[in-house]
Length: 101
Image 1 (tube, rainbow, N blue to C red):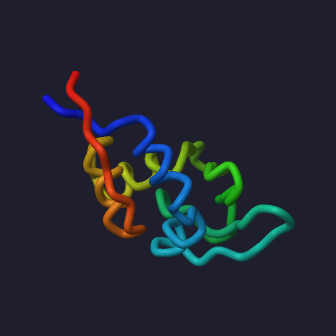
Image 2 (cartoon, rainbow, N blue to C red):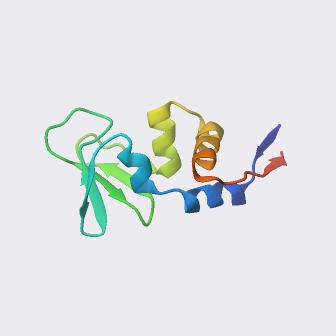
């Protein structure tokens, strides 16, 4: 069965805008080098969710949810890894290459 080539995954991550992706689920505000907002994984009144746009990582200090860009899409869209990569590739216009193995 063919799988997405590693360099294609890296191209998708490089092309994607973490703040734009997360911003579809919660309002984010710039806070220093990062962005903060209410966690899209649990109900909360005060922002405890942080997004690092350079490293493309997120973390919630309230519920402990955290991970990378692809993991975020997997969790919010209920997708497996290949489907999340394909979702982002389509959104950001990245042509995926597949390899056998």
